[in-house]
Image 1: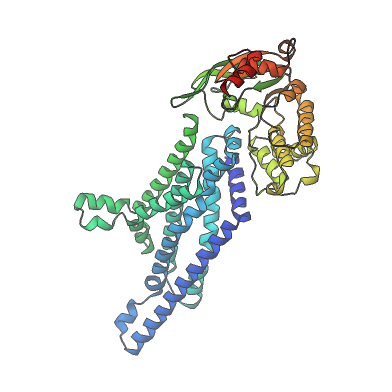
Image 2: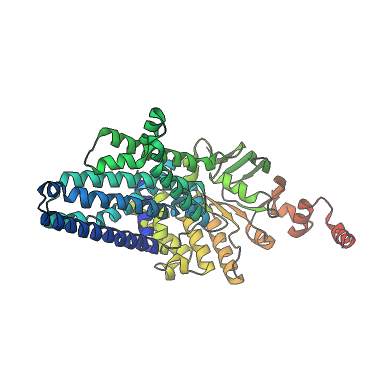
Length: 257
Length: 248
């Protein structure tokens, strides 16, 4: 395990010495800030209309959780679909291209340690990225009264979603030595997992339920509503572990070929 | 020290090496020669545990590369054809990283890094970023990386490739100094290098061992060049110019 942390430390360092980290962070926060600003502006606009119309019922339904945080988290999740492949594309592909893969594979490290190290390094970066968006709920908490439990559930959902994206990215990066191929195939897979439940309504009861269950968005949506169910946790846990397991097999396959 | 027996490696239908056997004794410098595509790099990758052979065994210091892969990897220092460097790291940072994944305890890490920095003449560039180093320095960092855990076996894949004459001389001197008690497998295209450094020569051609003998025995009656040409071509050496004229 010590070795995994050594690799994770190296990964995390290399994110922050390359410009990729700063481009990704800036882009993410810029878009996040724009979403937040717009949602908040719309919220106060609606609030002023409803109070002018003296419609207490509508005013009751207007709350920060449903009208600002939930759409914000959904928007951020779409941005993550695009940015996570950029974060993970290097992890294995770059090592293969530059020849450092041979160093890792001939060192006394197990494949599991290598994969765990890569995963933890990328996870560290992801946590920094998500933590920086924490400023938005903090602003809301300071000036309004959103429900903190629902925010926490939503953020947990966003983190789990992002980690699932990340493991898919590690998997596609382990297949190739070309970073572009790694990023594009990850992006396509993530978009597919994102929209796979669209035909669920017309696909019949059994297939529809399966499609809904497979879709990342459905489970994420539940958590954004504030529902932390074991069903969701099991789903995300399975996706993450499955992708990591496949990555481990894929990296090890060098030894079979 | 190194015992390669009946090694065969296939990539799909292509046979890269077939039925290769040779040995290198402790403290011996073995020159591994052969034309491009003969299977030198494949053989070295199998010996270092990067990939397994289709059949056959390799034993390093008595440990089997397949059954005791970790023990073997701890004892081998490997410099691949292109040095495995992280361009965004500093020389010291990189060597510390390699030292740690090679299993050097934290307390000894500083000393190990200082030792290889001194041996490889990297004292002036310790804090430089590897991506900004010249090719000669990069090669030396690659060598330092292979030496950090003080391995008994060194596997060097064309360590002087692409260096200028002065750098080549430096790297050769370094290998000579390192040899001593270590077993070294040195793959190269440069025949004078073998004459200078190696006690034993293995020539490989089209995936098979053409000859394995000591340098002294091979060069009794002819130069190493003649030996090399004889074993990688089917024709006797003397006839070659005539043949070339005929085809021209």
